[in-house]
Amino acid sequence: MNNNGLNVIRVLFQIIEGGDRRKFQALSNDSDTGGGARDLRFRPESEFWPFFEKVFPDRQTTKRTSKGSTTTIEVLSGTIHWDQLASAKHATLEVWPATNARPNESRFSKISRLDMHDLIVDDPNGGKSIFMLFQQQNGVIRVHFTTETSLRNDNWDPTIKKFAKEWLDSGSKSAFLDLVSKRRYPNV
Amino acid sequence: MSEADEVLKLLAEHKNVLLSGPPGTGKSMVLSKVAALFSMQTGAGNPTYNPTTGVPIPATPAANLPGHINQAANRKVFRTVLHQSSKHRDFFTGLIPDARSGATPGKFRITEGTLYKASEFAKQPGCASLLIIDEINRGPTVQVFGGAIVAIEPEKRLDDSGNATPSTQFFDLLDPSSGDIIEYAFPARLYILAAMNQADVSVEPLDVAFLRRWAPFSLEPSEKKLRDHFNITAATSPLPTSPSSRDEVLEAAVQAFSAINNRVSLGRGPEFQIGHGMLMATGSMPTTKDEALTHVAVAWRVIKNHIDEAFFGDVRGTAIVLNADKGLQGNPYVLEENSFGDTPRAQIKGPGMISENQIYDLLLALAKIA
Image (cartoon, rainbow over all chains, first blue to last red; front, side, top):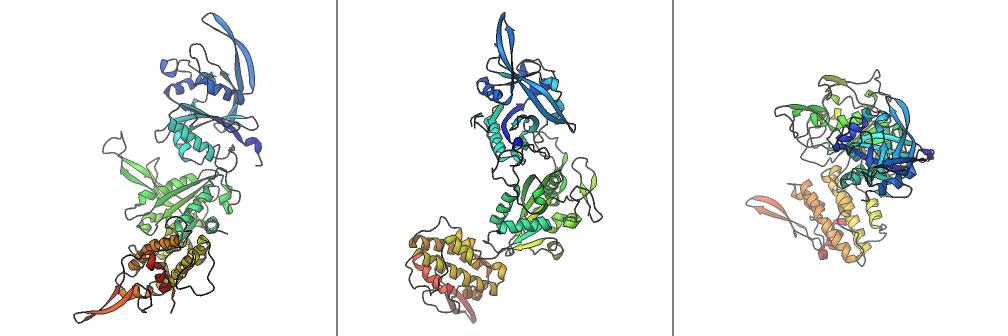
């Protein structure tokens, strides 16, 4: 392989539902979205947080106050890249740990600031719209929007395609595949 | 070079390839191998980001595919089978009632046929399509292609960048997105591989104007493939009157296969020969003499059916193929001359099913040339 840096080593999938679409536009604060107008949530945190620790290189500690008690938490972050209107864009994405109110849910914080809601793709056959994030061997993190129909039918790498099919068939909302450690969720 | 590699090379050069051969010569296997090579869905290599394709992590393309096929990182295979009810709209576009769930009754929609989808995919940057059409002579082929028949020719496509050239041939097409009739042309990276069995007596032959737009690739019955499959070598001495090993049974089968094909070819035409696959396709590989006898006895049923169909109504022709007209010792099939009133009648007498105990004698009788 001439461009080892372009090798993809970790992939994250999340089905974008109606509430999630509104989160991408900061229009959501209803209960259907799982609360939080701007955060994309991943559960169980016990599975996803160790994966996010490998994908996002930067860490900072901060204090969070909830119901009168203050705790120190670690926030992960990294620069994500995507293509929009034929131009390359990038921004910092923060990953926050679970709150007391919604335990065992990690969050991509304030995704509405990324202004990427126009990139969400409707499935032509009524399938799921899907958010993808993948990490290359050179550390670059990319975001891509696709559909269930594409993942099942298009010319995706066979490893990615097989895992995506198994995940979609499992009914789970989120999934990750770590091609280095071979860990995966759901473990189907 | 394997047959699949040869077909891919032809596709790269001529865009449209027509695979033909008697039944059992491996057409379906070649189609599958070409499809696998084209899409390279092998799982080999690491998933890799590729910014030039519609799919950001595409299947790793093969590095050694011929011509422009190799330059497309995102390759996809489309498949269809032609049949008597196939319509132009099944291949291109057309109006059909919208019977989908939730659709308003009485409304119509525009279909996107297989060839149209393959063409649209190949028009994307870095993409190439392979459309496999099986049984292309079993339907109204010329009507299905309609005005597009000229446009499939390699020099009448769009260029590699999707631009029209002075020789690009456009045809009218109902545009699925606008509903208008538009002028349409095929992209350079659309490859069409069709297959047909010329021995299909139930269909009309394809016309010359259609056939000349395809590069032909013929598959022939092969003794060598049979011997390679069974891992045997050609006998240098006459076959024994009674077999002592698995290899002797299978060698007798290969020699009978070859002799039958010589006679079928003379009596009915080469396209009616039996393919080597008819002897290969019955279960697992025989390892003992008894397994070999059972294997060949089962295969013989299929071969006999083929001979009966190819020589339907021609008793003497069938008898010649079966060597039933020579009074050979051990041959369970015998041609008998009788009369029906004043009319002479020929009849082949023999068992409906050949048993394991009869099959070797039959093979010896079939293998005799004279």
